[in-house]
Image 1 (cartoon, one colour):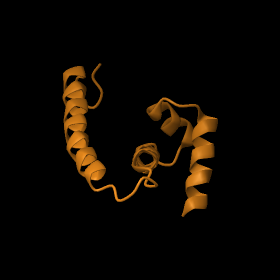
Image 2: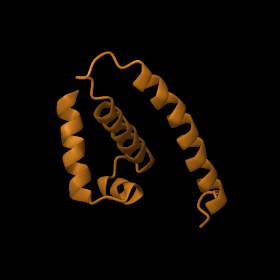
Image 3: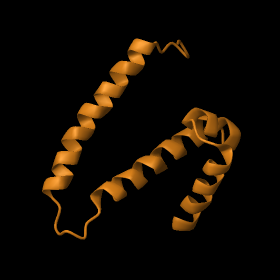
Image 4: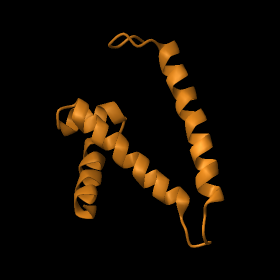
Length: 89
């Protein structure tokens, strides 16, 4: 698996780097939780989804079909998520 000079080993290293950085950030977020009503998991999931979708759309030059393939999700699902993101703005 080699695309744009990135090997499978490179991808594995990137996943490990992301995981390591996220663990540190998550610990800090959980320790900073003010009250039981804070839904940190949901907030981070929403933020991560927005980052992935925005990046995929940028790489795909706003082509929903190409972006959905990059993300590994159905085109209709991505269209729905984009609509929801635009309503949140």
